Image 1 (cartoon, rainbow, N blue to C red):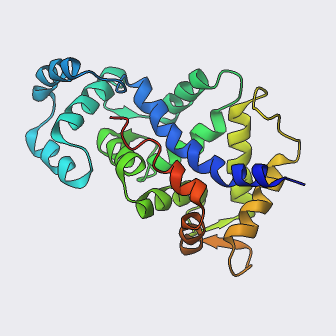
Image 2 (cartoon, one colour):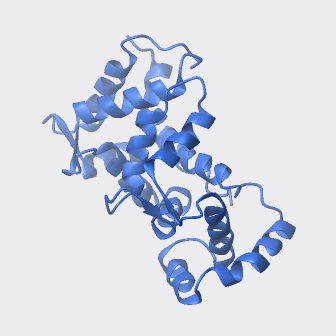
Length: 232
C-alpha cells in the first residue's frame, strides 16, 4: 500500500507534469530567461513579422501582452519555419528533455491536447492560446485544459482506461531514474487513488465538475498550478 506522502504525490504528479510541459516548450523555443535588452532586440526583428490585426486579436484572446506575443512568435518561427508544429516535433522535444525514458506516448497525448482542431498540426495561434491557459489562466481554465488532456476520446468523461494510458505515458517518460523508484504496479495504484478521490458518485467515470471540485479541495494541486505563473 501507499503511505500518505506517496498518495499525496500521486495526486499532483499529473498536474505538475502538464504545467512543466509548457515550460519545456518555452525552453525549446528559447523564450525563458529573456533579459529586457534581448526583448527589445527581438521586438525590432519581429514587429514586421506579424500582421497587427492578428496580434491585436491574440492579445485580446490571451493573457499575454503585445510584447510577449511578438517574442513568442519570433521564437516559434525560428524553430518552426513552416508556421506549424506537428506531433513529430513534440516527440523530438520531449526525447531531448527526457533522454532516460520514452516520452513518445506522452508527447502524443500532449500534442492532441494542443491540436484542438484535430488536423495533425498546431499553428502559432493555437500554441500560444494553450500556453496562455497553462501559464496564466484561471484555476478553472487550467483544470479544464488538464481534464481535456486526460479525456483521450473527448467524450466528456475520464475513465480508468484513459487515466491508465496517461499515467503509464508519464512514468515511461520519467524513465528508470525516477526517484523514488516506482513499483511495477505504480500506474494501477495511481489510477485507483485518482478514482477513489475524484469519482464522487462512484459511477466509474470522472466528469469535469468532479475533476475540478476534487482538485480545488487539494492544497498540493492548487499550489502546483501557481508554480509557473511568472516564467515570462
